[in-house]
Length: 554
Image (tube, rainbow, N blue to C red; front, side, top):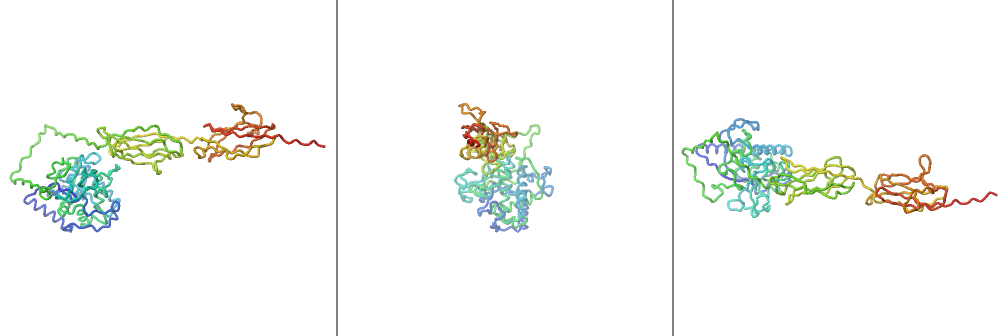
């Protein structure tokens, strides 16, 4: 499943020696002579899937350049090696980091597979020349798409469009995409988020390398076994030539590599410098076009010697319209809510690219931070949302908990240089909007005695009891502007003295039972008014009857 972009012609002893080395590698590995179906169960594969019969890249063309005969200077592979020896042993920094990161992750999640990063490097070399010599941005995404030819059945497999052109910009046929050349239908199953930016992008070397690793590890494969490794490579592209080429680079990279800066990797022959967004199939094996004329075997043309007095110039990269640049507030106002209620607005952000244009499909992560029990829908403290076509993304609804006070919500986008916006939200306590008696009993007492019944009230907010609500109880006159009555019923304080105004507080359930009320000595009808700070009011009528007259003693 890869793309055969071009052939490097070798002549004489070099060709024979390289071919012999490749055949020896295959013989040692007991590689099958033809593509074999993998017998794995797929129980270790991503999402339980197994590689498709059509191969990861639809058996697209691929580079067939072989490694040089010279062995790298030092056995093993280390990024600390000096940049010496064969240039072909150099792997661009971001690409090398992606391969090693994928190996590390697979070692933690599928140790039985024993994936070596050098196998990913070999496939990456054959598929795309290590992402065109490491032409990737700081996030590991190729500076321009790497697309294989249309798989239209004309010299290639016939695979009709499966992604609506979302990955390969072709709504008629599929094309292999990205540095590891996945066809869209395979990426839909095996795609991974290798760099943790919330996206699965086949054009990103971290995502693609991890996806390739999981694909190679499908089923019960143990890649330390030659037969399993060969089956894995053949599942990537059903071609013995492909297996032979990958095996050659795999053995070469195992003997040593070194890191080179991104964009400086050696490109395969016939790659056109990696400038084309679509790979060119090998004319000798895949295309009906005439084969190129061989280079004369005489004295090679001299290579111009650069003038050391003239510094090399590197043209600035063309800005990509899909590179994230900035994050801004999209009109989010004050975030306030009452305890237990949903905030009346949602946090909204807007993403722009490096040129200031609105940018879609940017992953924005919203996080609730601080000492609060406010939560997004589903009780979550984080939520990730992709920006829409207008560059905006809104956080899910946020609901306040019972804890009052302020807290923060952050919105973060981008990986290498993340952008962060911070919003302050506040939760206020419920304020009772209703004060009611729990029963409607008439309050009657005889002068000089106490009322037999106790008055109970409840304070609520939207039907829910509100604890800790301050309630003022006052014996009032009948005037239109009520004043404290100095006659009639009264409460008593701790010292037993009569008081006609009390400050009280509701309990945890919003209920309040008033203290005992004394009737006083004067018969009549009086009023007790209960009020809250929010203005809720209850007036209770207190009727005091005259004490019965006693008959005179005889």
